[in-house]
Length: 346
Image (cartoon, rainbow, N blue to C red; front, side):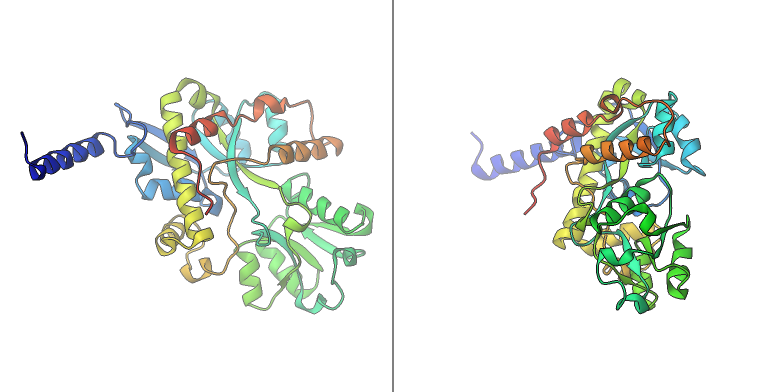
């Protein structure tokens, strides 16, 4: 019979062997290495992908990820539907839904960007000299407001804001300005009174004295689904072993992101990863910006996606119909959560 010391040594070696065979601690790694292609352009909302890659969560499952860039979503969506790209990030726009209506088959599977209550990363700013004139949302009446897209999630948020202020579209002047960088100068020089701006431009503009935040998007659009994880139907339907492990790894990355920015855990490490993969290279600025909200269980605001679609449809911007019950498929995310467990919000 083994002594207590010898038994402990044997158990330790056995545990080490198990860890080597199954480093994730949940699903066993794939027997054959799989490559997953992600269409991602360095957006901050891709944090889950970057962190999972750098922390080895994909590697634990024997998955290698490769990032591919596309000039625009018009090129990306057909590649995704054809299975040339497995995963992509998408923003709600009429053109996106038009592509689906015209036969481009992609699946909306998880959250990739929403506003955190009281700390929206996508919110309105006004010129510093306008603070005495614009004190509440109703004061936007007669004002020029810059928005980056027409019939996109930006426009949707804009519409929610003016409705919240008791205004109509005719009460304000919508100024289409696709470049967020140009918005900084436009607000600063007074050519527009306000802009629906995004981080890090919001924080940069505040630090340079060019504008100030006005309210918060969650005041009037608390559940706006800004960006989504998209998947190739082939990837989720024909490569189930790979896609489930991919999603489990992705959510582990998202959870590390939440731990860092919502709980302050290992923040320096996560900021280092974000500066490596995104356009925001200033680590000190990551301490100041309002970060993208990413649900640690991957849950989306599905009803809000429907509302956005209905607005585009009502505006006559969508040709044809989209069966959202088929286009939105959270089942892969839900299965991954069963594997890794619910996120501890505390």
